Length: 606
Image 1 (cartoon, rainbow, N blue to C red):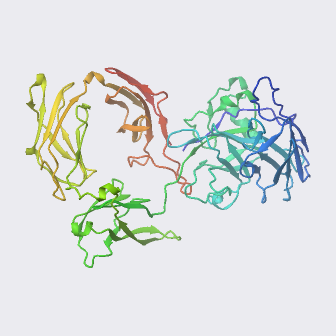
Image 2: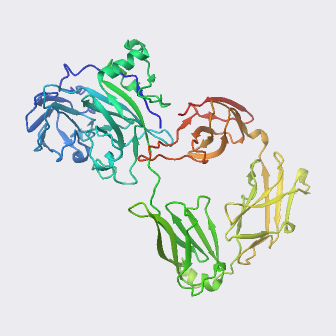
Image 3: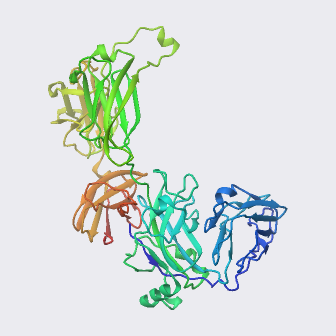
């Protein structure tokens, strides 16, 4: 990921800030204003703080919602303070010894809301200093998910450390903490000048440690220098010391940090005015790829088929065997791995085996132990098949099994850039062309049409009928029993399918002009949250997506920096950010018989 210190955008200094946050008077039948603070004792932003209790009084009765999880104290205390209510007053009591010359900030997240309407006072902060000075620096910014650049609506904890060691987020609670809102904007306030490690965490167990492999994280590539002089120097170097020259989304590089492609949400903060005390950064969120190999699922929904799913792709050392068979015969199973080798289907050839209700299998695969050494782990699984029957079905004899063939629906339309699918319920061993006929039907006359049969390279139970389809034409596909052979010798019924093709003028196309391609880039067309087309490009030029159904398409660009043909997530301890992604600024609405030409200049990647 790339990150940045952005326009150091600005607010008034802490001098003159008041505790009270007045709510608007009720002017209608329904109160939509959050509770307002009318007094604090000791006053908010106090210095030389020595109290053991804080009273915050509101202008109406309030309730607390999940306050033990919502309240963030920065720097964190060993024991969270006790929070309680007395009429309109929120009372905070703590027993921890406060550190000398330290600024503390209490952020209540979404815990405070009014009694009657439930209006929330979001991210209310109470701050004080045990010394003579109230620290006034801030680190602010935005969070986005690295894979799709969406904004997290759920809160993330932003954690700052002065210990810059790699293992710190795994072993130590942070020195300062902040929280993001439902727009992905965060703020860690009242910081002292220092150099910080910055880490974002969706804290699954609320312990301020990155100790769960499924927790979502984000981190800054380099340590972050936070002080007013440094902030001012960036403004002077960029010519933005005059606040009238500052524009939303303008960025400045610092300490080797490249400007990020994600615009900061500075517009939401612009009303606060100039502030030399805030540094802005962008963080990309991701979940690390699992490093723990194990069997995540296994089943036997069909008597003839056993399926096993793994957390990670299995290596060449992977082995399996039957526990029940005395002498192993590899021919009794037909194996098929998924493309990524993270799932395995075992088809049982012999009826003497697949008619057994339970089959026990032993699987051996390579894992890492606690010392990160590669060792062999073995799991024994019992695959049990139970036929699902209703009471009525039990009274009837078993029907004769057949090979079931499914394809496009009768009278349906076939896209010109596709093939006719032949899906069956058991692995295909052979397709006999002589038992298949394809006819083109112009003017109600059936004319034999040349075709090709292709077995699917990824799925054992699928084949395709391909031909040079004509636009807006009628066809008939005729298949006799025996056209498709399978490993169990079952026959299918005669298939007689009538279908037509789409008119070529129904489709539109996108002409995508790419600039600044200096490495492999994966271009994806996304429609209704699914990838409908994908192409790999390695140089500037035009990429054509033709035969597009008239719909709205989002265009996504994955910077495939390691050249493995897919998007890769990050790894914190290896200092790897997720591979960058970009999107065309606006979706493309494809119209029939229309060429849509768009241009994209990709961001340079370090």
